[in-house]
Length: 436
Image 1 (cartoon, rainbow, N blue to C red):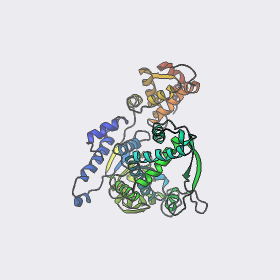
Image 2 (cartoon, rainbow, N blue to C red):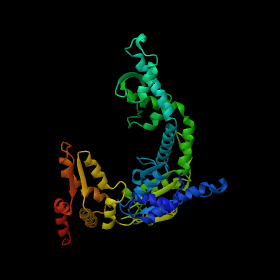
Image 3 (tube, helix red, strand yellow):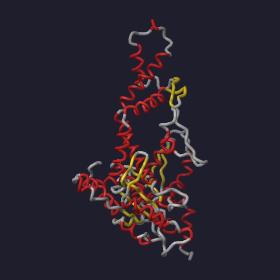
Image 4 (tube, rainbow, N blue to C red):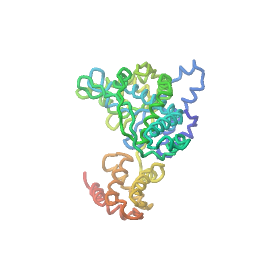
């Protein structure tokens, strides 16, 4: 885990997420406390568990993005799940335990990628030599005509990528077919679990040297690393650094007291989630994992239900609560310009492919921000996602006409252009204030 201070964590999150300082501070402290805990004695470390966080706020204000960026910042295993996809034990649907299995799967995959990176050069070296043998064996040169160091020259050419587009024929291991049980959908976990018992089939395939290098390197990497160690490290990382983001938790809260009818399993889902948040042991195909030290971040809009409608035991397991603010015109303006991955920059880069140099005037951006705020106030509040809708409508004609056939063309989006394209929407606002 990177040793970032809470201020440094917030600074990094500011590069991608506008506003929501309270939420950023809460997750920054929670992350730093993990590092602090790792420096304590083993005895004391076992006593300290993460303080789980509950985020309350409308859709599109940055709840998921904060959690996702936080995990990416420190390369922590992260999974996002939706509470509505789970059902109480006894009902048809996903069981809550699957979120822990998904986290372990993610952690093992992260560790495997890191190990592969460590042996990448060695695996590529082996792959290049194998490809060299194949190309050398099909060489049309007569042995007597070959230069003395022909094979060494050929190997160097392969390394330099001079033969990347050449097609060779080689034996490749086929991926095992998905296992189906009683007509159900193919299960990837079952396939992987039984793959060790199934015979590995090889098939002759024609493939480019570039693709062959990638496939051989991947196969050789698996031989060079110890998968038992990878699994152990994956379990340990999921236990100590894992983050599970439970979205739409408000949808399983029961508003107005006892539920019945369609609400019948909601409280049951809450009670099923509770043991994992409290801390328990879960069996996975990679080994057993304790959930005591996993950081859980729950989020919901809580428009209809309230936080108090969750069962008291679950409320108690989320001691840190932060309310995220609605986005204003100023927030929208910052979202359009400041983040590294700002949506305006994304559209500009996309259109540059077709020789269009897209730019926005300051007045145009202010108008887009104003319209986004008005739409969220007069219609459903979907937060920053409103900007995607507006910009798609605004740039639809330009994107459709762009073909890359003409030289680089400058296109500037002005306030007048914004008002002209979005005129029907503006008329709707003018009328909306008269409708009761």
